[in-house]
Image (cartoon, rainbow over all chains, first blue to last red; front, side, top):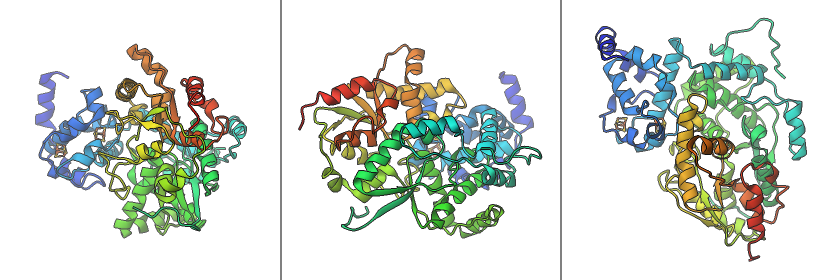
Length: 176
Length: 305
Ligand code: SF4
Ligand code: SF4
């Protein structure tokens, strides 16, 4: 992104209420306690592997109110949820939970990562991320493992209730 | 820490398999069941368990708690605590319990939603990882009594992964997440040596695999490098997702970075099972993908202690 564009976003679209919105989300409560020490970034394995991702910077952007930049960029999805940072933050910011909170807000604002759309659809169909059918059960049998009857109906109902999935009219709801 | 196995304390759990283990970790599942049976731990199969809810939390935290509560309610109905094999299932189910305990209002909202599927949850189901059950409920002393073929001469690199230990608050701080000891101690009762390496408490990278594979591979590489440098006969782990990164993807990662790892990866119950005298077939070694033949030959060549 060019410097020029970045400045423009910063001036036009700063949302000073963004940090409050994040602080009201489950997991985001402690964000305002961050004093930018950088312990989280120093502990972060994803940061080590990919310098596009930097938890302290994301927190700083939230505190500044750079809402659109935070929510629409895919870096909120890069957190591996390992909690290395969370155990070490001297201010008790629950950074892993905070990243989850940011994703939840991003989803509500229409920025779901496509890999999660696929996963949610699969959960609605199978009740699990890896389908279990005859093939899998046969293989399980070879290792003397009991068969698993997959049944997605209740999972689907609950996901629809929360708006994670849209109700489907003619889809078979059993999934198995 | 909880007491070790009392004389007549019966260990019985609903076995919660989650998504990955029953499909991609059948060697883990079968070795855990074998070991449990020999140790007198009853693992009960309950119908109706689904995904634990972990992957849903990124999209909608409430929905993740709801799926967790549904699973927990099934165990509660059966009057059983839950044993998990996957560390992510463990953290998601335990975190839900933790949240419900500290926020009764949340639990009532969850129960209002659970009505849609005719369930309710009061918060009684405890959740423990299988390896933690071995460590805390069976206990090292009791385990030692079951060792038939000590693996003296074998040296392995432990890998805890993240969610077995962290967030520590969710796991009743049963271990110091910065300096854990349980896996080393559990390895050492088999007679094998546990080698220290700097990535033993690192992240496997599995959490970003679906988002950015090159990043996930780089994260996994750090662990493979540090484990490989110890000269270990194998890497020992206890989570199906960690296995997907460190074993299933090992060749691919090696290719990307032009390194030949060929580092056998075994699940802890497989290692324990060998030391208990259970056959490699029964422990599912046919499904280990990296160097399992060499590893088993190495085990066979050990002087019988
Ligand atoms: S470790 Fe905590 S206080 Fe330090 S920068 Fe990260 S969130 Fe802020
Ligand atoms: S939880 Fe996320 S931000 Fe924190 S160290 Fe792990 S990958 Fe980095």
